[in-house]
Amino acid sequence: MTVAIEMGQTTAGASAAIDLEELLATRLLVQGNSGSGKSHLLRRLLEQSAPWVQQTIIDPEGDFVTLAERFGHLVIDAEDHTERSLQVAGERVRIHRVSTVLNLEGLDAENQMRRAAAFLGGMFEVPRDHWYPMLVVVDEAQLFAPAVAGEVTDEARKLSLGAMTNLMCRGRKRGLAGIIATQRLAKLAKNVAAEASNFLMGRTFLDIDMARAADLLGMERRQAEAFRDLERGQFMALGPALSRRPLGLRIGPTDTQPRNAAPRLMPLPEAALEDARAIILAAPPPEAARSPRRAPAPDLLSQLMAAKPAAPEPDPETAEPPPSAEQLAERRERLDRILRAILAEPDAGFRAIGVLYQEFVVRCRIEGLGAVVPELTDFRRMLTRARAGLGADMAEDDAWQDVSLRAAILPEDMQGVFMMIARAAKEGWPCPGDAAIARAYGTHSLRRARHLLTYIEEQGLIVCQLDGAGRRIVTLVELAWATAAADPNADDVPAEAACSNSTL
Image 1 (cartoon, one colour):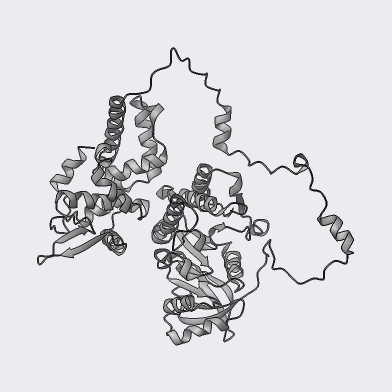
Image 2 (cartoon, one colour):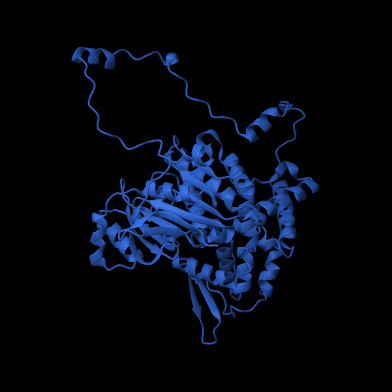
């Protein structure tokens, strides 16, 4: 059954609709300057599709919280929760199929990026059994996937950009249909914007944005000037869920209104100048008299920690000394051995990271290492090294520091593949085949493995070549490491690479 979402009317007066099933199979990019009606368009889309599909809105300004009363969305105030609790909330949102609004209002840019990344990461990492169809709307997407580094830390930018890349590049397989809206295409990371198949372009004035919008819609450059003439609520549409040719449409009315309505002109209050002086320049109230800032509500993990009995202070005479370097090395070796045993299982490459981590924690407890289990973030790094055939000692080698820095520009799930190729290139081993790359990436699709190589090459990290016999050679840019030629269709893993796993 085809579900048509009524968005308004075309410029010719006909009904304009979005094919919801096609939208779920693709992605949507909305662009328009401030005041073009971009948020109104998103609200119309959310209201019309609410009875049909689960929704989540990443809302940096709190504009969409009014959907809760009319359509039953759960509003999550990110300011009241930690990153960890938001990650867990993201997982539960998908498992229980609850439509939500993640309200990021009140947070600075860095904390907005971190909390949005944690929430998106939780939705992305749920087991396959819970990959239900879901619209994920990100308003002001240039804040979460910036084209260039801003004033936030590199770590926050990488977390947020990685989450947005996962949503737009890999979300479809997991049932996540990304809908991103931005004021300026030039400020949005190209690898995020490039994954959209449907476009709704509103009023814009800058030449670079008009040119990019015209390119995306397949219009000639001389037609780009038309974007300046669009009225509020008018958009040019293109895509499989919208129209096969550029189509002008006007967005219809909505049932709900934003909490922060547009300001309207109103007369100034009548007051004598002396009265105004007395009010405005009156002495400030004492510090203690000011209303205290509302304390954040404790999350579930904090409540559990608070319920635990306080640990007694260690006695200096009976306390154990800190572990020596040899003991730390032995501990790392035991943790690597446990991880190696997990990855040796046939389906390990295709299981979610959360599932692998749970098994890792259980095995560590069995081995008596429950007190030193790495956090999930550290486990991800261990997993990346392990899939690349690197042990902890090898990863700390100076020769690999540059490789690690280069890998950091990729999304987290791609870094292990890059490092696996880098290891083969450094040692001069045959280039891993498509099947080996797919296993390291956690997929059965050989086509996706080839696309992954193309993506890494587009980032300027590698150069792929085929020799006269059709065998693939991969060279690392600037490092001049190159793999030996190998058939990309071969399903076997090079013997040297297989042996390297035993050195974890």
